[in-house]
Image 1 (cartoon, rainbow, N blue to C red):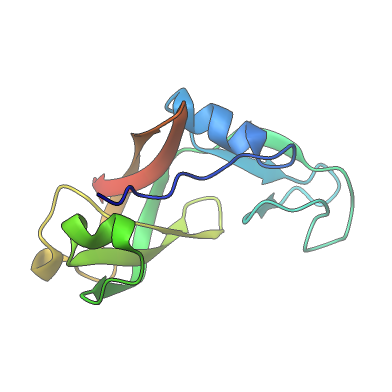
Image 2: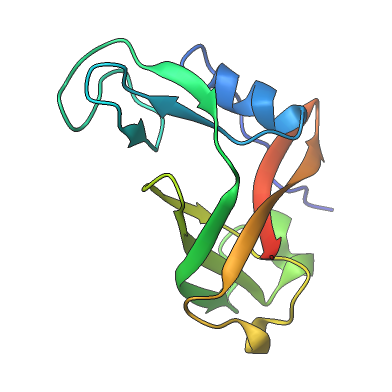
Length: 133
């Protein structure tokens, strides 16, 4: 039996995963230019300031695009196929890749409004997913 891979938080990403475990979508924010950043990084991608602070985001967004995965690329996901992989434009102005749950894949629509939810994937780690708002 293959198991799904579990992300391993490091020093830089720990606040993101700590927030997810507590049901909060944490994003980096630049105090110099007042812009949000994702994915996790050491410097602001807009003005190159460091360090970035962490803030709770609203967890709301819009479906930008998606793909339905039929081919098993990792045996840990074999039992879940076909599954969606989506790009979600968060209200804070960043784009995140995640799965959408609570709706059939054939019901996904570009532009649909979404809300973050969090899935415990084991070993004290939770990851954000999204559901229709």
